[in-house]
Image 1 (cartoon, one colour):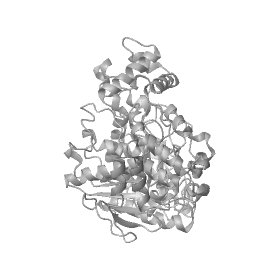
Image 2: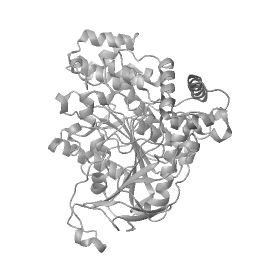
Image 3: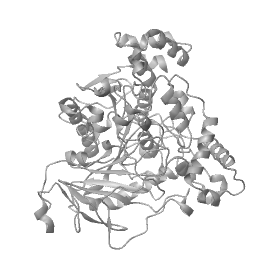
Image 4: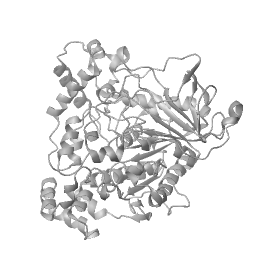
Length: 566
């Protein structure tokens, strides 16, 4: 989802009787693994599980030397600057390079995260247990990357996997959830894993183009931050054992939407070579007209007229977000009791702007840009996305009459046809299970459309997946929820047993998914020995990999269902 903070929308969705926002941003715990000798002056410490100190994990970057630590066989570097502070006179301007430093800078702890409204999810016991968020200190000096690598300065040229966090364009960070820790993925795949922070909400997307040429790109500086991070990776990652010519960007939810957006940004061309979109195909963008309207309404709410720049740059973030929240509450339509992705799209707040410059056109569609036509993709969603019983055990008691009432509100002209289409494949499904799949269908439709757009270009394959594995945690109420696949992607299924339940069942799926993502980062093809042959998407076959206890490739599995809701 996107918006300035969308606090009001989140509250409405959480109170609505159909679903809960399942944590749109996914902290770091200590890594595990088998100790491997690192050599050098500290070889006597090689049997220790974690080594940190003078001369340990020291790497030169273009701005200065940093020192991280070694956890078992993986080197970790955290809070590494890729840009200068975005506060004060730099607020709303494109990112600037960090100031060089002398000596050795510590890179052993995460840096500040972008200012944000974290929403209401942390107030609910189910969500708090399921996601176990890491609430880091916020601040505008937040342009930081975190790196995990099996080797440094060893000329290994490993594939690089750059993760973009969720939270729409409003919240989140590169260390938001335990699932984001890159240690196990780096170790399992012999890859370099990078996560990052960037500007969010109105600090990243307030369109001030009407108030001076210096701010012509202000509506997209949050995305330009990500471009700056990718440029830092290009210029520095070889010193961390990575290959700057084999960079995969991957992200979930808002992070997937950022991946989708980067596919249409000329400034990002050549900075990545493969792309993975997880539950991020319904890409939310503002027109210049809407973005400037939201800006002017926010300025009016703040009581600022004339040239607002200096006052905006000096104003506390809390005052800015209070005003923008008030605007969004008035501008956005109430969510009501029925989850409707179409309504969510209409409720876009501050997010990327189709400005004809930074983002000239929509990355997918009839005029999809040629510049990323050669970039292979993995695209997919989860079965239940936002429509789960997290926080609401009572939803499991939904009756068929309840379901018909919800469908009549969502599809007033074809409710019976929709119900019949979804019951045909799963006639024994409960009313709530049917509702959950129907409400999640627009997310699946977005992924199909995105894959179809790539197929039309016929320049690089798109591999479509559908994550259907359902957790047993919390009596199974979360089902295949929004974010459910992330621990498996990062090889963190056991570490994140609060999401997966852990154990052999989760470990088996982890092997299938993590190894597919690793293979794709290495070669552009996700196939590996532990998975059925995964064919690229074609309109005639609609090949989809189902990730479940038994992974399998299916063809056109939900054509009738999709036709009924489109």
